[in-house]
Amino acid sequence: MKKIKQFTTSIIATVLILSSFIACDEVGETTTGGTSAKNLAGEWFIDASDASGKVSEHELFSTYNTAANNNTLWLDDQNSFKKFKIKVTFEKDGSFSASSTSNEYGSVTVTITNGKVEKEAAVSKGGHKVDKISFKAEFSNEPGVLYSYEGSRRTGFSEDE
Amino acid sequence: MIVSGLLFTSCETDSTDHVSQITHYANMSMNGDALVVLAQGETYTEQGAEAESSGEKLDVKIDGTVDTSKPAVYKIKYAAINSDGFPAYITRTVIVLSEQPSSIDLSGTFVRSGNNNIVTKLGDRKYKCDNATGFDVNDNKITLEFYNIDDKQIYAPYQEKTSTSGISAESNNGIITDPNHWQWSIIASSTFGTADRKFTRSN
Image (cartoon, rainbow over all chains, first blue to last red; front, side, top):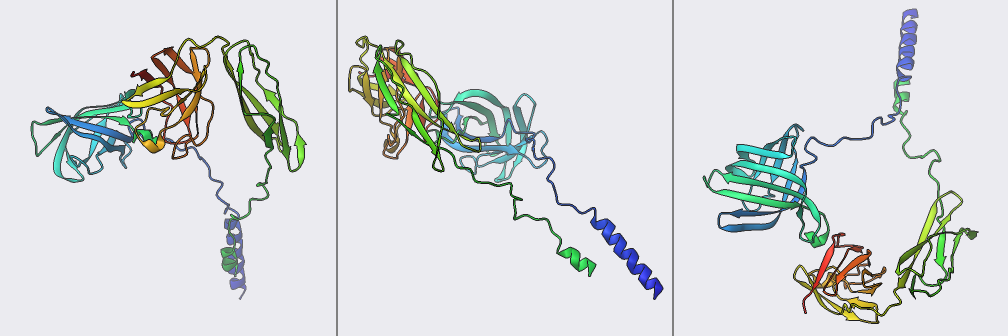
């Protein structure tokens, strides 16, 4: 009986001591950093042309960081025109490339060359100075055919849409 | 018992511990018009503004002056601080027009990005245009009255319901380059960003 009493007392003491460490979460650090790809990420309106001229105009296009949050970036044409969503590797200077990389929207692989994002180097449809994205793409089902993509960052103003 | 007692312990989330309070911003009203247009050399009379909060009259601080000898756009800002220290503001715009008869007639059809903006003369220095941003969607075409201040500066004061879609708009201090070219930026409540908009006469 005495043993049980001692045992119970020690349990109560332990619980009391442990519960004194329980506290409401004060939410520590609230400033969140950007992703590694933040300078290249965003939405764009993009034109594509081949040797004959423009083949696609003012299509919505997205670039965003990968889950790895390293030096890779998703290029996503929102399943329009050539239909590709691929991972490219980027450098600190804003250039990016990929070699016969697999495509989330199909079996056609894509090679990206001369990819770059330039600060305020483009003019949006409504006349605003915005960032510019450009790259050349070659698709495995059309070997030797180079498509030139060039786009301007989306502003959200409906005159630019 | 103890364990089940602990189950009822939780972090309080509903109460704000009396850190939330209500503050009543000052209600402000202007004596006279929010837009005053004067000719160079005329006298500007400051009519002031009134402010009250919860029935209590508040002091109004006036910021800004008008020099009627210099054609320009002047903004007079009226501020009243409520009992909790929060300010409210209203602004009067005073346009001083050159006393000289205008040497540049801006009426006619101007073009930006292939879109027409037709300017009609309402007075020697007062005009109206029907597409202030040079846009191609009819519902969002902004009609604005504006002033040729001194044949160099151009300005459209704040106006409401300037388009079928109901946009409010004002211009910055735009530039008249010559009788056939002028540019400004429009600060609009929707649709438009603040790009420089350059217009060229087409006729």
